[in-house]
Image (cartoon, rainbow, N blue to C red; front, side):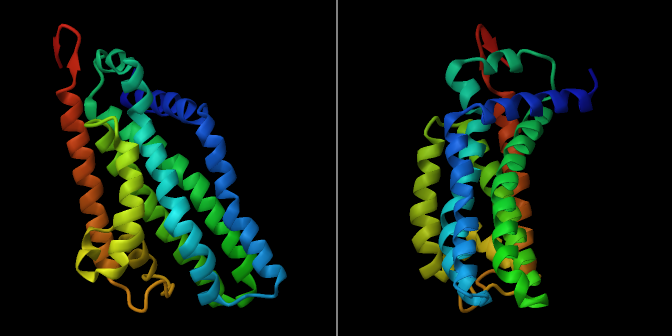
Length: 250
């Protein structure tokens, strides 16, 4: 099999594993929440961009839905195979480790964006489309924030899952403490915050007014996101190359 075929097969298997989990159904239901809230918001006659952004996008999507979905899919891309030991069969095959990591990361990111991105787009259009060009720009900015955040969270916690079985617990702690509280009140750590990368990236299109000022400018946000993603993929590949197989090492 050529590299493209191998990549596609690993992606297919990973997607099947992720979709087959009970918690994925719960994530699908959770992703419907911003849409339902947007409908309620619209029925109340609200089309205020800043108010919608603060009450729905910031409070629900950016703070809860985005990190939770991406962390779960990222940590779960290798998680099941590591837990039941079947990862050794994958690694016993003559497949480049970087290809395995890339395929797993692609599947996790695709699932994350499919859920969170779709939810964000639909919720935004329901409520902000009547606001005209500014409303459409705000929706696109929200989608950009979700895409950047999804890639960063998923890749980071996919890598972490190769080092510890507690990646999910660490991810939830990171989401609640570091992202949920500290990064918003301590500007000095904004450069180490995926949440702030997302907000900064969105500002390239529209200032969502999540904060009074954008703590990480758009160009810096894209640069730091890229560094994080590349570094995480390299570390994950390095870890897989040293993954212990029965009777020896890879």
